[in-house]
Length: 299
Figure 1 (spheres, rainbow, N blue to C red):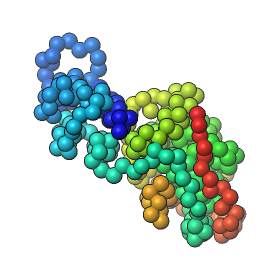
Figure 2 (cartoon, one colour):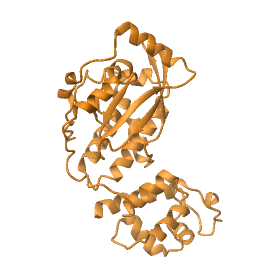
Figure 3 (spheres, rainbow, N blue to C red):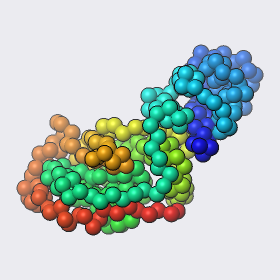
Figure 4 (cartoon, rainbow, N blue to C red):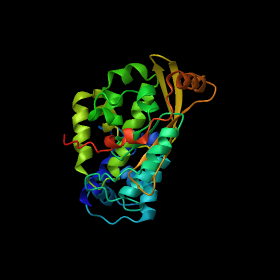
């Protein structure tokens, strides 16, 4: 629980430092500011708690916090709905799965693979570590060839920052990179101290300044419809929206992401012509079963 409290304190501090007194209607009554953002005493005053208690909360000490108090703090820090959900989970008010153990790899039901094989559009199954666990044939052909690197190539966050093809071809790269890092940060907060996240973030931070800056911003996001625009080498610009279906067959670790063509962009027409030309649909499910294995990243 202590590590979860440290995550809570670190996140609250990051949000506090992003606010200015004018954002919350505070006049400069605490002397000259040497650090950015609100002071702890200002947050405490707005949230109607003592400065000492709030300081201890940020420091990760074992202090009792009611739901009402945490909601007051969320309001004081002007948290977004996703940020508030993140804070409430870390504070113990909400579903926080026990992800302290290494990711288990349940057997993939052939029927589930058959379903994604029959989809017209790129579809992948992703776990809580943003690893691609299963896919249909359209996914590596139309998105990027994650099978070239069977280990780190299947990690979506690693690839968006480190794969040169994606850096060059994703037309909304900055937006999608920020979204990806924020999703991983939210998963980290739900992980109950799974050391994989810190090891992964440290390794990626060492080789990607862009990821390091985004990770250190502590921004969090929940899964939502997300644009993905790719300049495909054969088909030209393709505009997708990613729709995510959670808790597949009761497995809270597994999500299905479907890349649906964005209406009015000509993407669907391009995909239809490409499917006819290359006979994409209908590849047997058995061809993919051997790929359903977790990436054992150890830093």
